[in-house]
Image (cartoon, rainbow, N blue to C red; front, side, top):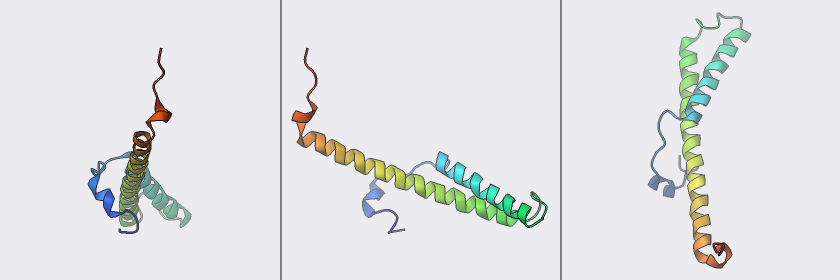
Amino acid sequence: MPFFLPDEARSLPPPPLVNKGSVWLGLTGWLAALLDNGFAHRPVLRAGVHRQILFVTVGWFAGYFLVKRTEYVHAKLDRELLDYVRRHPEDFKEPGW
């Protein structure tokens, strides 16, 4: 997904497969499938199991890539902040006693 993450994001370690974003969006996908079954007057848990698995999988991968993008954005901000601190040490003097 070139539009989602730039090439410099490849230098970061990948996030774990089981992370907060993946679990939450996977759960959200599963609940969306259950709600769809309920609104269509089908048995909530027994109908459309393939759709439930699909929604969980889509939510899981969306959560994984959103966490990956979030980690990239935070790493980029950290790098910019540390570069600023390095170039302007006079603004960040430690208080002397």
